[in-house]
Length: 291
Image (tube, one colour):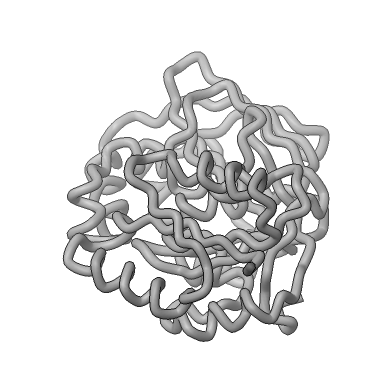
């Protein structure tokens, strides 16, 4: 009996590709049970059941949301997380150095069994693997329909963000021993370096250093934030006074307004939110070179 189970989200990505993805995963993972999700949020429960059934390696076949759910399902166990990157985007797979366009090579990584211990941050006791956002990007996630996401992919979030840009941003209140910023309009919290794709946004981030990387956009309008997002992505450092970048193990963000929170591209409630870091708490199957 194999010790590998696959959790497949067949709705990740464009509808026309769903059957193709399913057939490809089935052909690669021939000897392994494949548990297919039938509704949103089911991947976490399927992963938890796979842990109870004794599987040692549990593979998330899908996008960042699927990886997030499987990570939450196996958190606290000795199981290792494998990834077959599919769907709209899979930033965590990029962070680990997995080839996003070659499922067979990713399956080779799963079978090789090289385990890397990485940090596992949480927000209000829900785990995430790559990114948390409070404000602009969470609002864009909230207002991007599934059909829109399927038809346009990552571009759908940019279009939603552009539609939100004319609004007045919220006031966010930030508490951490490692920051001078007390108020902001938009906050991003990273575990790794990448944000939104292959973009090195969190310049000092290391996925196993025990620290959250935080970027606070201070009292800025949304149009200014979008401009600075571009500047941060394509510069080697953050030097502008309107943005503060720091590292911490604990972060609290509150607001008097109803401000959404996203984790790994999925909505996860509203402020207030407490971020904590759980050092090297997740076992992942990764290429040896990614360490």
